[in-house]
Every structure is written in structure tokens, then in C-alpha cells.
Image 1 (cartoon, rainbow, N blue to C red):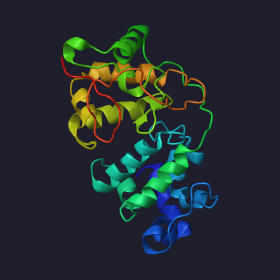
Image 2 (tube, rainbow, N blue to C red):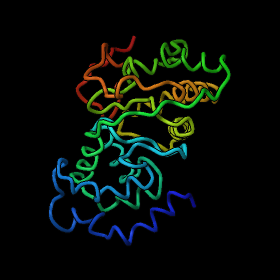
Image 3 (cartoon, one colour):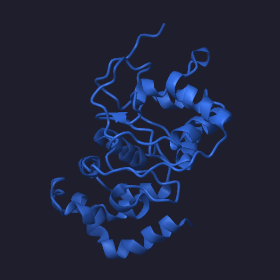
Length: 246
């Protein structure tokens, strides 16, 4: 059992069922601007760090400042079984769509600085391979560049595409692997699953090492738009143009 899960289980009596399930059984949750939201998301911050900034443990990602629709989609994916992590599923299995969106909006509204990245954890040739895949992709293998969807600055695109910087290398590795093996899924069409299945283990290691070593520009805010059409249609991302297949 992880340290995070132990802390979560110890905290549940103190939080009380009302903090987790109150919106389902009683009154609607408060508006995001209400300072009473912080106690309601205390269970989230046990793993994701103070204010959702992440922790040094290297696995749980930052959720502060991520696009609201992206966070909401992930909460729905955990609750509905498209993503598999039992502590998350147990925590939110009885929460309504509206309340999950309240949680997402709360964390999305947090504008907090990012720490400096750790030193690179791979040799230069591996980092260069990762940079090339992130910025240019590999057309011969039908691998689009990460920047085509996640934005030129890799800070995501509002309201539903996440940034890729400021995430631990271990987390990036695990999520790409989960997509490749079907343990993580998204609403159809699941474009990331198709991409991850084309990546080799060496590709994954290179991409995650390069991304984890990059500083987050500015305050890491998601872009308002993409400069060009997305290379593929992705579930949960509406309203963005998609390039026609050649």
C-alpha cells in the first residue's frame, strides 16, 4: 500500500462522508469562488499535494491550473471505469457529474507557479530523440508531434487539452504505457491510445525524459487556441478543427 493511500484512508473519518458524498445526498456544492471548497477537496490534495501542486513522490500529477474540461473528463473516466486506479474510483464513485465538474473548476482556477524541473535523467542522445518526437513526430510511423495537440508551448489548450510539462517522468511513462495496454482509455475516438500503441519502449523513455526536464514557460497557462488543425479527432475534445486524413 502506498504512503498516499495510507494517508487517504486515515483521513476519511476526519473528512466525513458529507465531504465526499454530501453533494449527492444533500445540498448542491458551493460555487468555486466559495472558500468552503478547500475542505471538500482535501482528499484530492492528500495525493496531489497542497493546492494540487503535486508532490516530490514522482507519480501523482499536478492538477492545479489544468484545463477544466480535461480535469472533469478524467474524473468521469475514473468514475466510469475508463481509467483504472482503485483509490480514485472509490473516492468518487458516488459523486455526480455536476459535482465532479465543480471539483475540476476549482483546481482549474488555481494560478500557481511551477517549480524548476529536475536535472535531465537520460543521456543527450535519448533527450534529442525525445525532443524530435515531441516537436516533429514521425510521419513514417503516423506519429504526430505532441505540439500539434498539446500546443506549441506544451502547456495545453483550453478547455480540454492538458499540458505535458511539469509532470514527473515516472507519471508520463506510466500513462503512455497504460494507454498502450488498454489500462487507460478516453471517450471514443481514443486518439491517444492509437498513438501510444505506435510508440516503442525506447520512444516512451525518450519522450518522458525530455518532457520532464523542460521548464514550464510563464505560469503554465493553457493556450486559448491551436495554431493549426489537430491531426486526429479525439474524444472529449469538441470545437477544435481536425485536419483531413491524406
